[in-house]
Length: 106
Image (cartoon, rainbow, N blue to C red; front, side, top):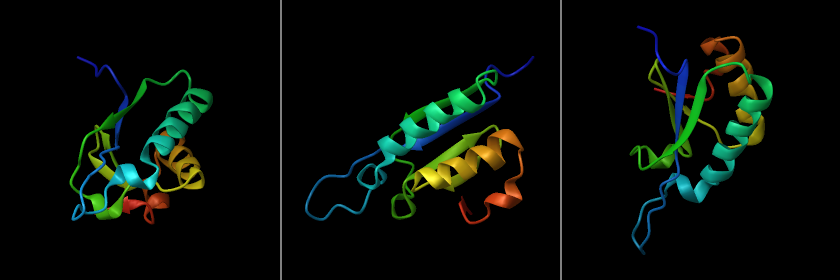
């Protein structure tokens, strides 16, 4: 049985409120990053079955915005459009994770 999606990417957009709330991904332009990622994947890999969704808190807020990609279960932090472009080039188009070491979260 095949997977419905080749890759499924969840981008945390959680926003913590309150005076003592810790930093959250949503306050680091996560929505803008997710929308850019989704748009660029549709442009550059329209034939691929790749899904980009927002998620609630992934509990790695200080590293945000964070995202996790399946089926591999790899974590990344994508803060800029340039980093999204790198992610697409190496993770989506060539599946070369070694080239993304600066964006990977262990």
